[in-house]
Length: 172
Image (tube, rainbow, N blue to C red; front, side, top):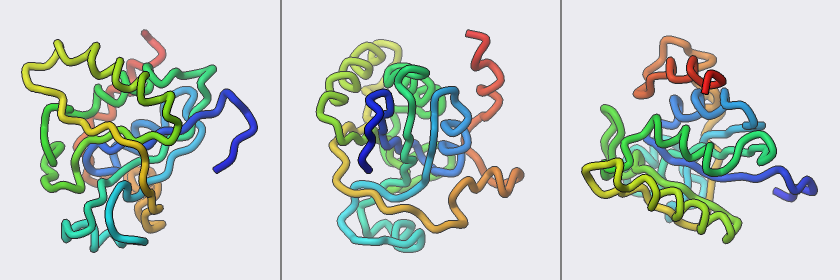
């Protein structure tokens, strides 16, 4: 994806079931676009069923395109860390398996320093070690259409995230 606007950036965030992560992140001021998919696995074009069989190595992930003049990477990560438990390995909420691991994936090498600095600054807030993986994005495959904006289409659908956190955004 080529962008000519220097204020536009992107990051891929894995935080358990991607339905709730997308519902949350897509509502943040400065987020331009989100898309759910499967990241950093070892199989090309995996299906949801493939990923659920735990044989592809992919994480359920949300692609986030955002405007850096409206939300910084640090602020985006701050919101992301409100909806995950970064000390859990291969699980979030009731979802268990490597596809539900937490991860921050990037393409721009300069983002690595920002991400590492953020995580280092937050470690003391947690009793356990932060296990969220931070890696360059190797691959991302868009999930099936029925997964895109799932909770908008199915408001009573399963979500491990307390979306009421969104009510406090803007009051900070």
